[in-house]
Length: 220
Image (tube, rainbow, N blue to C red; front, side):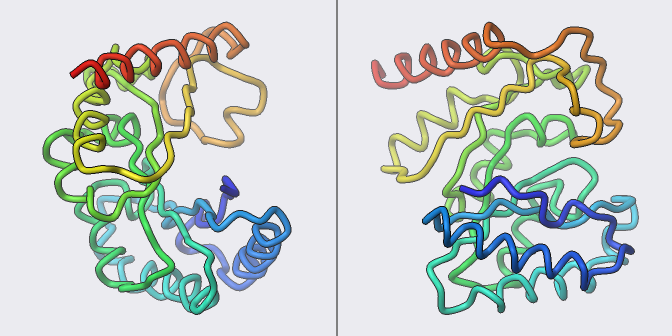
């Protein structure tokens, strides 16, 4: 997939230049021979999300219309401080678009950081539309990102459910287990305190944690 930053602008920012970037991203996906493009539903004051809904849907429809009839699949990621930060609004986007070219990413840690119960609530609301799962966990109390299975994301329960339903899709490791150069520019100030930098050891920890969960799930 192309892990694009499309939709990671303020809802009141000019859309047309961003739409040109989107069209360029579609061409990149074709060159790389991938069907999938990750995108978002625009930063905003989420306490006023309903007042921005029409503009969000207008922009999302422009994305979907542009790739209609192609095999490109746009993947909406639930992210903090965007319209689709909670499962209800993720579902709203999906159902409003009614597009064969739109599916959902499920990021447990991002939901946790928005005060959402990932399982069973969010999972059962969105499960039929998810084709891409981020393996990232977090603590409900602090929002701190932790290795998978050590937080409140119910990743083991979710993976077990996916195995039972014959899930065909991706697991993408996005551990965020330490601060790294450029992190602040990518993510903005989310109030989390990462004192250590990410490194190969942290990523190995993320891989090992996922493998442990998968062994547990496969063993029933």
